[in-house]
Image (cartoon, rainbow, N blue to C red; front, side, top):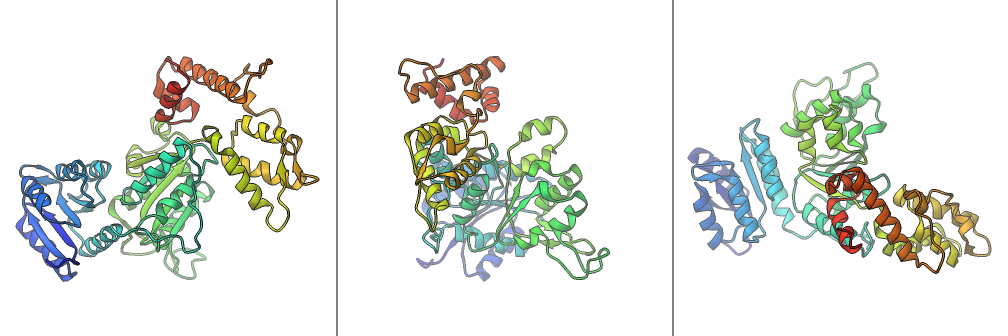
Length: 447
């Protein structure tokens, strides 16, 4: 084995399939190792350098999931792809949640195999830095945003479908773009789709494309979102707005990795990484029968929760400074006086970053004498005080942090009472992650 060649370990108990895989990979100029069971695979991984593992899910002495788990336990930096029987993608989804890179369905498509291998080996190379030297999309030093960035680093190294949850305006699309830009697909297209903005009658043609003559007005072939995103990432924003009929078609496209254009006789293979997002509670929609459970599990292989702006108050001065710089481009940048800064720090931000941008853009336009005052912000009565009825500022020199802690404590207490002490449900009512709620309970000394 030459020092520079990539090595692939094949784990499968079918000799014919092992031979087919070996021949295909050897023709790609790769080195190949083979194992017929879990035990042999683990022994080879312990003593040989491997750059990729392809494992069947069903093996004589266990499951391919055990190979995935072994690699995770030994902290081996090796992507794993699982091979699953046709129609048994539940096992593949479980493997991807455990850390697998991607999956292939039997009967194997050699074209899909070659594309997967190229993508998996590319993941081992560091993602290229932004050509324009721009800063990361998600800034801030708060624990919640650091957790998000750390999760994105992991997500960028897998092909698993990602579902991003969070309130409106929390930067879900920015997170999706950063996942794409840090991945091996960074040089390929990123296609963002607002599922709530497409008329139901046009959805199938918009997603899958059409052939010339497929319907009145179809005067030329047209690619759909899947074809446009081929090789890259397809971002489905507000995926909860998809009608049930379209959910069925989308589920099939995800499972088969193929789509059929309107008016076409044959399906065509597509290679896309799916990232979805919504501000709505998909679990609740599944319970109500308004979102398909099987599609939910396909989209939510790995979840990423975006924190609301009110959880990032320590970073607010940084966000404000950068937004003022952006909105003042070409002119003198106005300064915030103390009353305006305190008002921004105390505000609840129901619209999150999008609302903060709107507030500051308006304030820059209204500011006089190069100074932004509290009145220029036009925050109204929907600020921090409105978050929890009755939580009014107290006289007697209460500090801003004491006031914010008191408001936060009252909101958490109210949510816990409403959920009969169920912290998972309380976190959902508050629009935060369970981890965030647990951290806040500890910080505020709440039992």
